[in-house]
Image (cartoon, rainbow, N blue to C red; front, side):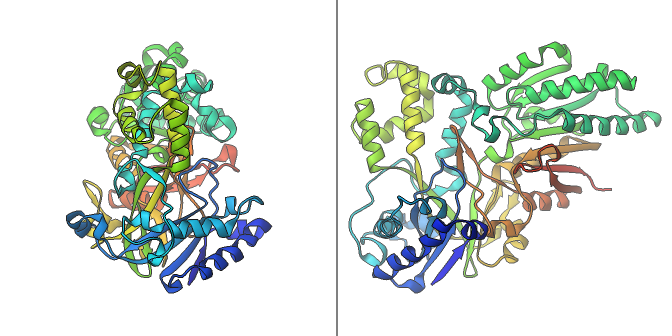
Length: 510
């Protein structure tokens, strides 16, 4: 049996994590299962709010996705299992690791939709779950509908929690709100513009785009610094500046507009979909000297793919509420357990305000509907399974990019599981045409920077308040940019080197 520990440093540092390995193995040995068909994967999940149980079983299916679609999931044959462990929670003194493993093994049948009971047809009838969706690729999961609802109804969520969303970030604010970083970017722009002006090649209108405006702090910092530096520089660039702020959330955008109101007509705001930029800001193609993006890509939908023993799989997920949590929600809101899935679907479709208006007998006001939303979100977990891919070229990352681009990343790492970053890749590819030939993209976000990173740590998904976070597959963005004539480099976020945030910089290749 293979045991893959993806948290070697944490294992060395934590006596509790070290002590968890033995009871895990003992529980596996006591269970009547073919150990040659089982592999254990041990992560250290740093997100205290996440979608995983302490121990969970992921079936490895023998049937490809196309056949599953035509025959139904209940007929899927299983060729192996992956036992996934969270060493962080296993290291807690109160965790009974053996009991968690045994429960996960007994519950495995409910993950496959099979007809037996537990791994190998043994075990009891655990699987006390309220399912919220069918099996889907990760990017199509309902967690992304929750994520979209969070940004659409952010004002109602913040009213219920009593705090702004940025307070849920590590440190209570975005890493990108930094005057020194803004000055560095602005001075580089001035140098570029001075050179173009000397050749009479500088356009009259100078466009800068910011995606993911947060509370407007970054825009205010940047514009204030720009105005001051331009006054010293004496080239009157501020007069010609057009700063476009774009965000998915109208509430966030309104807050940002208020923050930069003193910059008047230099600033415009636009509600947009980050993965479909060409439809909203395509008129700026070839005109943007700077596209500034902060903490956007890690909040966009993503699939995951894996290579297990030389075969490539797509990770499918299925969201659910554990039975005990579902019963607690039902009791707290005076509902029947059978109503929860239907009400959750209605919430995701119409939002908390209309949910309360349409069902006053269940929710007295919007605030109570938000409390239901928060309770479901807090309890939500995801089951996972591996479905074989017929070929990488048959898998569409975006409508224009096939999985073939993943081949060099997967081929070099043996058994590995990585994010495809579908939403980030789509947004990134749509942003490149906006750049002026002398323009650049600067993006602060959570990036992996080499394929091997995925063998050494956990990179999502996790929960930030009411939203989803996944690290972004940086090498994949490098590949797509290289094919389109751009250079991509990653660097430490200089103003906070201890942060996990990296800076991605993109420019046209010389």
